[in-house]
Length: 77
Image 1 (cartoon, one colour):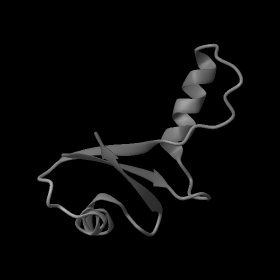
Image 2 (image 1 turned 180 degrees about the vertical axis):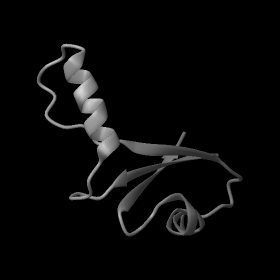
Image 3 (image 1 turned 120 degrees about the horizontal axis):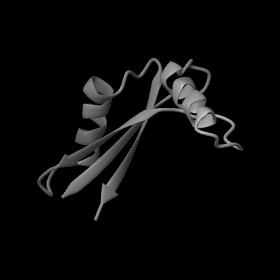
Image 4 (image 1 turned 45 degrees about the vertical axis):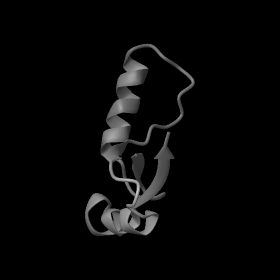
């Protein structure tokens, strides 16, 4: 099985990487982009018996900084 975990900064947390990407987009001549927020994607291949609770625990203990980040779990097909 495969699970995807998306980790993003919480609203209100400064995102310098997102700002740099937004600036680069504008420098390339694209318009209409109001904001960019950067994040991380983890793809975890695992045995079918691994529970969602186990994956949530991985996220809170290792993959995400719960003070400034949120995470979303998606079961891939």
